Length: 262
Image (cartoon, rainbow, N blue to C red; front, side, top):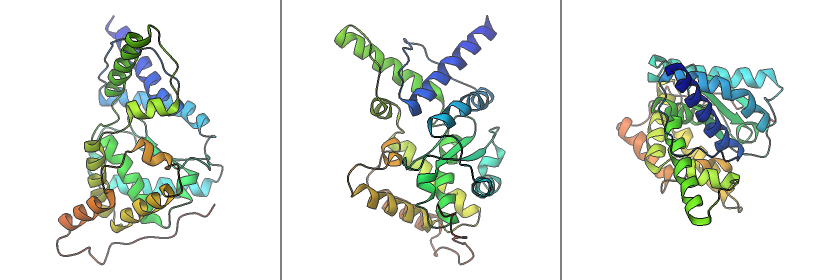
């Protein structure tokens, strides 16, 4: 029975994670699931193939995949992430329209080619990957919260209409997006991790500026929809850099090479 409950919980958690990125709403009732780190790793591995398909598969350029994996490994190996039980892997998705990056429980981290193509250097890439690793290290992606949110939303819908419904992508984003506190913590961890890996953390401010500029054209990039803007994120990141480096950013930190062209 114990093993059966674990498998049921894992299956339901997988449904919640895939609903988050795929827009299909499972009916979960009032069940709550809190996974161990080992179970999170298993869930991430199980969910990765279907997620890849939803974003056009992996980018076909092995050099691009190797470059992103190398930067991600550098960020992990020099930070607190290296002491976690998670199995970190970094993937470039072929999607050229969706500007986004996200992580599955247990270690898989994804960036779309659309976002990668807008980054100017390795330090900006390290900042984006460090932010995602920060979410995982802080366990913001533990599916228990997503399951609870999904259950609450489904119960509210049944109470209001007498029946459930199939949610759109925006429905799930509004229900399962990271909280303000999650974003602040992930930004702080991103600054810490990228600087520990030898990258200039001011590059992360440049990422926020790029995203803000993209927003000015109308519909915000998906990254800002799944990672809600807690006020002026660029200013908060600058404040964190100043707190971490009160005497100024060390000259030895680098922006690295330019990111791969499209």
